[in-house]
Image (cartoon, rainbow, N blue to C red; front, side):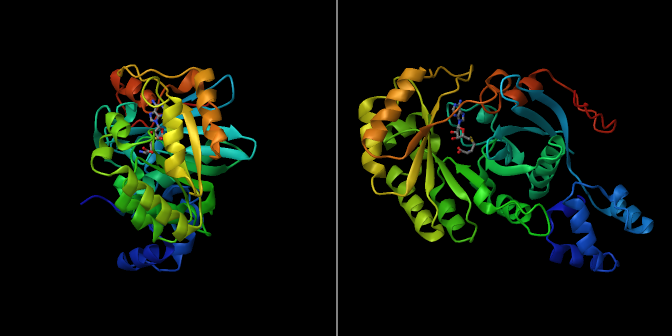
Amino acid sequence: MSKPALLQMFPQELSQYLKDIGQPAYRAAQLFHWLHKGVGFNNMSNLPLALREELNELAVDLPARIIERFESDKDGTVKLLFAMLDGHCVEGVLMHYRYGVTLCLSTQVGCRMGCSFCASTLEGLARNLSAAEMMHMVLLANGELGEEKVHNIVLMGSGEPLDNYDEVVRFLRLVSHEEGLNIGLRHISLSTCGLANQIDRLAEEGLPVTLSVSLHAPNDEIRQQTMPVARSVAFKDLLASCRNYISKTGRRVVFEYALVDGLNNLPEHARELAGRLRGMQCHVNLIPLNPVKERSLQSVTKKQAEGFLRELEKLNISVSLRREMGEDIAGACGQLRRRYLKQGAALSLEKNEIPQKE
Ligand code: SAH
């Protein structure tokens, strides 16, 4: 049996765990406090040595580490590559905005949704990430920032968050826990390719995160050309789940729309989209497609993107064009990990070599 990862337990669960191994339950608060500062068992200075040694034997403290980092010369965006204990790795990105630092976090190693524009899904899904792994990546990202801390989180790295529902919901509760990092749920966005049933489930959790839905099309026919999920979830059912989410949480939904030349960027597409979103409390985020070299889809020019934006504005849709960040280091989603896998980089986890920040 694999060792339990204590970073995924709530204080209550830690108390129970300590009781089960014959230790005093009141140590749970100390344990939770240290773990959520990114401190491992060995350095928990107010825990007795014997307990630290026992925990080292029986459990896992911090399950990830940073193995590569790339910093953009243009805007200070930092792309991080994290490795898990089993050697799997995923990306994360730190972006500096006026209102604070945003971390883009992965929820799965790879993805099984198969969207044709996305690099994360090219090799399918390797495995889900655990809540402990997601938590630790946030803590490691904080460690990169010095005084500043992660202020916003977007679950827009590799993976489909709602395809890893239980771990993602546990992560949301842990990262917003008031005795831990206490990151406001309103500062967290969860992006989904549109698993309508899971959106309905999320609406009942009492977690007021911003729901981002990757729409990328004004209708089923166009959506099905790039997103396999559109064959099982109809556009109108997806919008119904979004409306339900809005009414249950009181939060507006953000629709992501990657502009692909010749596919979804004509004025008639803007008009059709506006018609379907009319009256909904929502915002449309336009993204010029970031071309993935394994695929043949073409991006749009800045002028074309602005034309599409104006068309939607004319129809009174709240819309913005996403500013591109870290272009010189990022590439499309999932590309850093792929480059790393191709190099056949051997991960020597025993050596625990952590590249130093320049
Ligand atoms: N699985 C989730 C979250 C991960 S991707 C989802 O589908 O929403 C985060 C966002 O980046 C999604 O909107 C996704 O559609 C978009 N995306 C992926 N590859 C892209 C590319 N090459 N160019 C532009 N956007 C892309």
